[in-house]
Length: 317
Image (tube, rainbow, N blue to C red; front, side, top):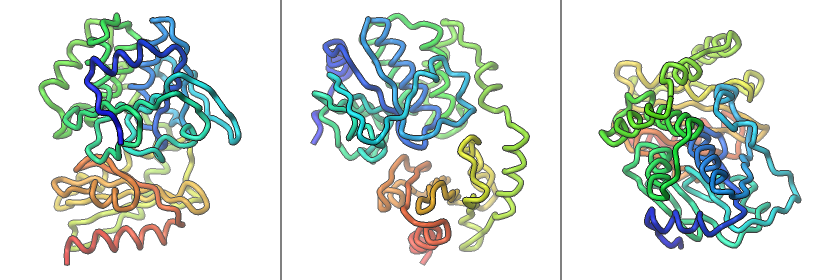
């Protein structure tokens, strides 16, 4: 069980540690990457030694983030000693990937905003009302009285932009918008970030066309899902945004994206208008938010679809 920390206590943990490893969650999105990189830049400005890791491929769409090339993927059997292992934007230990085995840290700190958090770390700062972990990081750096550089501001803004769906999701609050507005004073260019986030490669658009051919409706059109078969999947292409297409179809309450990324591994994304899909994701070892969650199922695509859709079907019995 984690010790629940205040922002001040979290800041003290970071100030006391000299060597830290920051880990972003598997299936990395803009919030975990932006939040982690912002914290990296901030801690290095204090003279701290910081190693960055994510146990997964990073979508090319995030290549513009300052410091993105600092990430490395730990190898099996590797051992790294550190004062503190910091897990960012992850609600459970498995979301941290192999870092939990590789890093031999005196303590583990988890900074998160998911209500499905499993309290796996030694120390936890959790704010489930925050629109993004990036929002927490901004408050944390203010608490620590760390100067905000342009690189830090860009990373935080991008994290906010991602987890709020470019500030249009219902998790966007006045605090979120105020944080975004504050960041502009540090030379953040909103159009630069939106252009980089929204740009599509020709291959990505071609893949989207193939994926939309799999669009299937269930339960009178209340559930819609799309799939990415293993022969179509390409880890270099950002497919996370594909779920927006079934999500915004009139009459659809729950949208799903299934993608088989390995021989016996299918990743599932859930989106909803009102239904708490985090409960379904949690039942499969995943988690997230009420209207946006995900999980990984150790099974081929069709088997995973059958299992998850059966669980969703119970909502409509």
